[in-house]
Length: 145
Picture 1 (cartoon, helix red, strand yellow):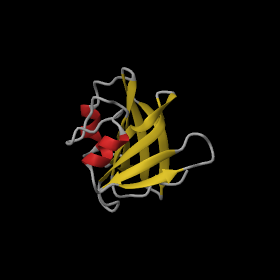
Picture 2 (cartoon, rainbow, N blue to C red):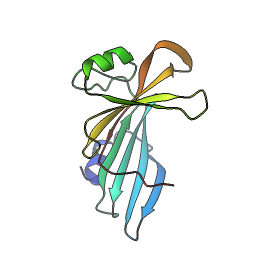
Picture 3 (cartoon, helix red, strand yellow):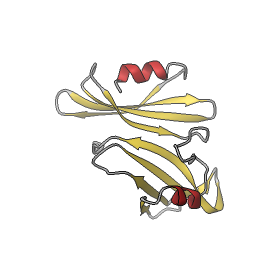
Picture 4 (cartoon, rainbow, N blue to C red):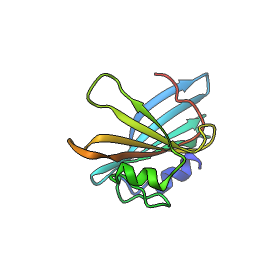
């Protein structure tokens, strides 16, 4: 999807904000905008030359957006694993209490879905863990800051 088409769809969410701009070479860049919606945020990343960018990353922190199998933000990890048998999950531990698990659905070389699972949900510990973010990513490596 082009940047223009995505912006037309997201126009109803007033107050978009530039979150990140990374230049790659002389012409290409990655820009990421956040679009607030009531109590949550959509994050959309665009990749390419200005005027010819394409959507490369979409993230939603909303529990009313669901996958085709009914998985949404806030669903139990056990339901996610039952719904999608081919998940590849990795623990991300950075030495702080904010560890999380990322589960990838699909081939990284193509468009794929990433589910972030945190044991800490809405500021307090719940057991078992729940999905805290769902992102759809294109097959590219994010530029290093």
